[in-house]
Image 1 (cartoon, rainbow, N blue to C red):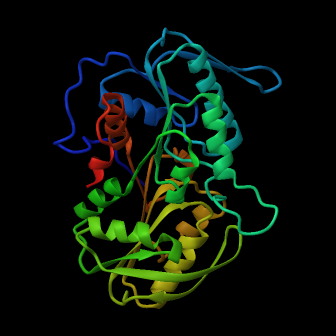
Image 2: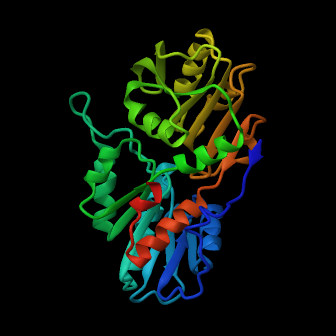
Length: 332
């Protein structure tokens, strides 16, 4: 398993920061290491707070420094256990609002409940919208999210939502691999826009699409490949790897269609069982490349895994929000 620490996002964007004024950075319990790396890029320490639980499991949070009039950024991916981490984020927001913060930005490297983003059958909840409503009602001023499951989720917020992408980090890493004769592959039709943008960044690479049918939640059945993958290195691009069913079925199909190598790339390493068994299947994946939007437990590491840091991309976005400058220009 390869783990890469944060490097400057780019030589043009990275800068020495000595006057931080009223910028404050707080970490939830979901990914404190990422928050520390973001703080290192910004040149500021994590702000002080107390977090503890009562005997019945209720969470208590207290901010231990004055944030009156400050621009506060709360870093918390709502990954597993998703309900606990989401509730913790809401309590952090409420504490900052009651402490008279000027602006509260929820920095959500992984936005949980995003897969239910529309109704596909009767009597379903649209949880992506529900979570957006909860954040707004708690007092969030704006949201900074990374690789939302679908771009339409930005419109679920009645506040500004900045959407940034882990693809820049993934592509920069793959360019160091000096791959030859490669093709970027979308694991399904819904991911074509994501794969196309990835391919454009990656030297205008050719694109292929897997025609996939899903018979149930977390159950994927891949049928055929649209495009030429024979004899090439197939770079399978998705936003997340949950149980690994999508990329596993995709890799099997790509190998059957003559792909020389398969590299899986995803921003969010959810890694629910049996993902690890699928990703480590002998002779299937040459490499699995993810980011640290969600922390990967030591027990989940395996030889083909490479974890890249998105701290500097997020740190740059946070600085631009604080300075009220363009975030979208980072990805042009």
